[in-house]
Image (tube, rainbow, N blue to C red; front, side, top):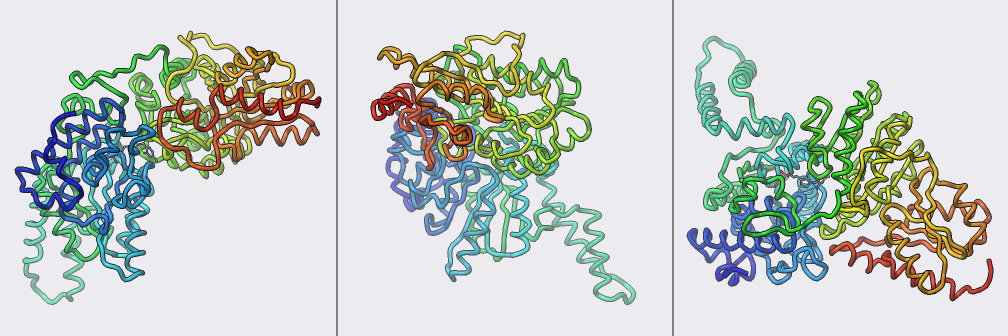
Length: 630
Ligand SMILES: Cc1ncc(C[n+]2csc(CCOP(=O)(O)OP(=O)(O)O)c2C)c(N)n1
């Protein structure tokens, strides 16, 4: 680790106020070095955190955290905040099970007022805290720091709508770097660009305002008419700032890397009555050349070489994501009505090639999952075949649109849920732990999970043949297929795949848990027990025929899923066994009724008892407890 004398001496935000601006510049450099070195080892959200180093210093000098609340949107940019609020030791093991989380966490520090992870929530949360403060008659500041990407989310607009209406004291810092994960999209983004590219606009605006106000009007019109005329003239000459029209004061644009300038504007905001938005311009990846060059690649990254910025991970097979991206391009070639929709996750969902090859059929809607789903429904009603690709955890936002706009009308929309199951280091806000539960309940929905990348290819082609809504969920990273040929194999709708016959025990596994089941079967075989393995393939509809047949033959049915047990696959099988009047014992493995923490996936599997060893052990125990017949 580098030498960081100034940072080492910081025990909390108050120490920052002892430093002069020259020392603060040195401190910013030290913070950057620690952030880059740690992320190179542990992986993490590098580019966003590098962009807000000076802004974070300024915030902690002007405001008195934790009395004043600093609410980070998403929370992926809070590394400097963590380092300045007493978490240097924990930061060394960033995102590991024995280190600090990659996001603010209330249980970690009083300086984290909430547990963010999903986007566009900071203004709502900040407003809620401000209302609570006022109702309690307390006196502190609330600062919501929201990115220009997060501002594309509908919830941010819903919040702004109420912020302007209520007029409470709330400071919103708009951290504008022109980037979401990829380049930001949409009309709001173009509007911000226009402001950014034309900083003189602010000055001209003030000058025009002054001139209009000073023009004397002859004759005898009433004050009201004069006022209305002047307003219309102003609006004609200078389209007012959206934020002011919404009832917020607007201050900006300030260079977010100039600590002194940011401090000056924050101090002004602190004195202002009512809601105020400070527009801060920052550069994503600032201070680390590879991240400045490729901010989207360095948004969230695994371990990399410090010198070159090159990834240290050497994939041995195509990831599920890459397979999806490649197969979708093939499908688009044969189906001209196929369109792809993403919610600000073009790279993450593997749609970059599709976007390049089929630009007219690709739609990035911004961080707007609800809109993405309703948009897909509209396109399906217009005769197209939309594929909506969203991470499992973020699709939670659009459960209502899936039910109302898609399933209710039985529309042929294909949902591909990447990052389903445990994602590892990003932790509880990002695990795809609930999708089997929330998708299972939707009438008309077909729900599949591939055991490997080849089966993902087959399921995608099969989905195109289906008439109603289809969801395919698959995990982050690599699967067991070493390579994926172009030619798909046929998947029979609603049928499971028996991989291994057994006698007293059968394991029914979903998705990559099939590998776990095969591993457990191998362990049991070594101990003289023949356990069968069935790849469920379909969580809905269940393959009732196969399950009924094996329940006839064996003593213990085991379900293994990487989803909450609540409402998941195991419960579906339990209901079926009950309906069949089966006397089979059911053992269900899955995620518990609590949030799973952060750490490496194999480690989390072990902790949650969904690794091959734990499964084999529990099966043996069950048979030992119940050695008799059926
Ligand atoms: C609901 C939701 N959808 C998608 C994401 C994934 N995501 C994390 S950060 C991010 C971009 C945020 O951009 P911005 O707010 O401008 O912050 P920056 O990274 O540029 O600092 C996205 C899309 C998320 N966290 N939450």
